[in-house]
Amino acid sequence: MYDLLFDGFGPIFGIPAVLGTVFFVLRLVLMLIGHGDAHGDVPHDVHPDPGEAFKVFSLQAFAAFFMGFGWAGIAAMRGAGLGIPPSLVIGAGGGSGMVWLLAVLLRAVWSMQSSGNIDISEAIGLSGQTYVTIPSSRSGRGQVRVVIEDRQRLFNAVTDGPTIPTGTLVQVVGTNADNTITVLPEDAEGRAVAPTTSRDRPLGFVGPGEGSAPRP
Image 1: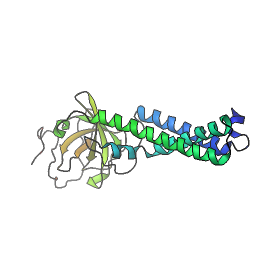
Image 2: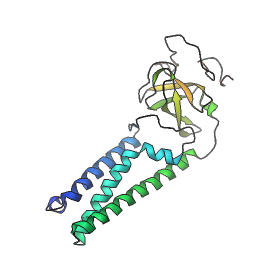
Image 3: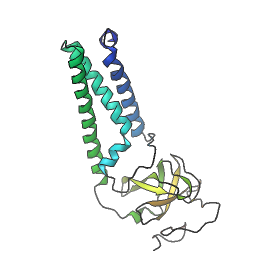
């Protein structure tokens, strides 16, 4: 195997094949067990767009390309006995094919996840877990995973308190006109922890114990 991947001109394809495969599999496993992190303000709501969903997995796309490029190039150079130029072309085609396949799979997954309309207000009062860090004082959006009707949903989320890191248990306390939800961290007893500093509450905010529907 070492000679196949790293002998002669092998590293041109062997290194991308190995690194791409390892990173792709590791990242996929982390995401499946809920520890994958997507950075930045990703514009998802309760019905995520599959094109935007693919952006979340851009690292997987790069890994998929290198994985496809490396193994297709190795197959062309070692298996078919082709030279470097045609092997590079075939490798590029293999990498592009892997990215396309990943996009198709992700579109299918997000399409299934977004099937079935729900009212965003149904999330009020439910507990969830932050998937993307939520910036403090509504300075940006994060993402929260909430289970509604036995389905895991991803919501854009803001908070009125301090920054809420990824993996924190939160409670949905309100909805907003831009189709986001307002969340606060939960304490050990499952109650929402209100911000320590007082501030005017924005439209649509519903505090703990103040009702089950967003204010107009």
